[in-house]
Length: 337
Image 1 (tube, rainbow, N blue to C red):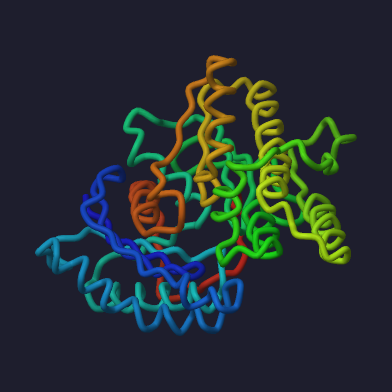
Image 2 (tube, rainbow, N blue to C red):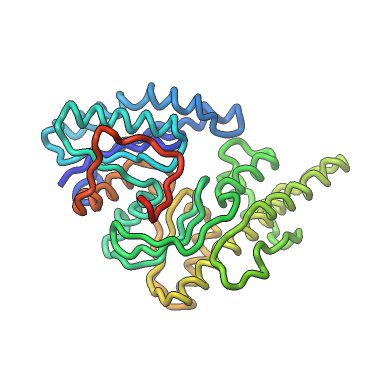
């Protein structure tokens, strides 16, 4: 079964064809990093306009390279939520047009579910149930993956997402957008114990939730202190300190949840799953606790349409379909999808 997939939830336009949920036949991504770099972050209006420019050429390229016709496909999957509404609308409306023109069924896909499905390409033996840490620029969730289309959120951020915190502190340290990537590289050269940062929610032992706003504020205060004194920033040490604090929060809650819920199979997904320290720490925890631990390939960590096609396949098998009333949604809870 071949699923044609479209992803446009933020600033990457992506198209893919996925077979049977785990085999990627072709995919293309048009990145907008250079378009948003001058602003220090994603500008929604710019992102929407770039999606409009990019989507049609990408669709043609993916289909033509495979020498396929739309009659060779079985369904069209598209990210409809959550994300930037203007960006989502481009993908949703294009997918609806394709569905009308070709007669192919339309399958709506939740973005977080798609990130989890990105694991299936690199890990053919991974099957639910398992516990997944989904961390990206907009989301930080601990999710029980009960089945391919059934999920339960047991922990989430109460304020900022981990990726957003990394990007904003990266920007304050002088890194180009996306700052989190550069912060991770710089942190490899620094001392993570150079500065003292607060431990979020340290008095709440019965929660798996995260909070990163306090960490971000404390880090901003340290950075501002150096600037007020006209002192040069110790970029590497600051990067290492902040990265370690965020990763500690993620790992500690995730491992505690795994033990409490008695999961032996763990996974990570989302853009921040590319963070080098996070990957190392979870590998170490898996070894110590005898967990089976899975990670996506780096190319599948950031937003892509392959993951939408993978999840779309399982949604299609479950009978999920959308009509021409399908609309983009900025926020839809994972369990309500």
